[in-house]
Length: 147
Length: 144
Image (cartoon, rainbow over all chains, first blue to last red; front, side):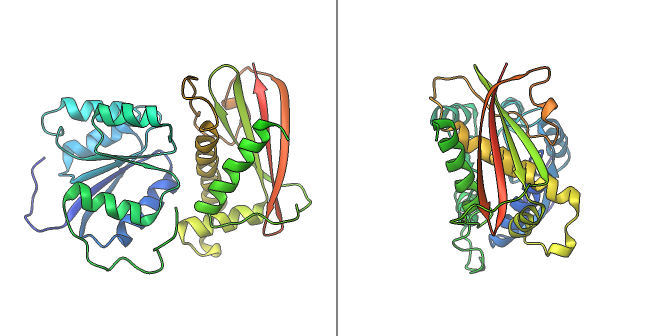
């Protein structure tokens, strides 16, 4: 799906079967100080692929352990699709074992965060992945907190 | 205290502090927690982790995580929040096993029979901690 406008706002897709985690990640992304266009959600990999078919997405935050289609399968499907292959995917998961993280990175993930995470971890990964500099609108309230 | 208890306690402390901003009480509160949530660890043997939360503590946890006021919370949101807590506690607990053991966490559930359908417990250990004078009880069962 081509980008419809040329402004510097970014479209995010949050993929997690937990509504609570989707809310938490949305909250943290909003606090990160980046210009947000669309902040879309999907409950699993299958739904995420439908969203990716329909919208231009700049970055995907995805859980791993989900019903229907998990995060690993989502990354594999995206990397095999020419229109989605270059969209950055950051995995946010409870998985913390290094060998599993290595497997996921080898499958094509662009970043990995283990839950619980700090809001600034999300901000930093957005900066790194999108190559943007974020101004200091990141609130003091969120600094130093974990999620 | 067994290694299983110690590792589960550590996982609970870690998640309650980092995700929900709670430090454990020095003295363990009495009472029967009213909301239970379950998660499994696959592999051989399988482990069923049961977590029993006090309703008041569960509400405060949701408030802290979601930044919502208590009056905005409904039971459904509180329960979903506890399932996410169980998921993350399960993930932390998984770190106590060797990498070579092929293990994973199941999806969390409010119904223990959905974790390992048809299985029965072989042995179990329990522990209780408390936060803000509210008890949080946890049980690990080896199931087959």
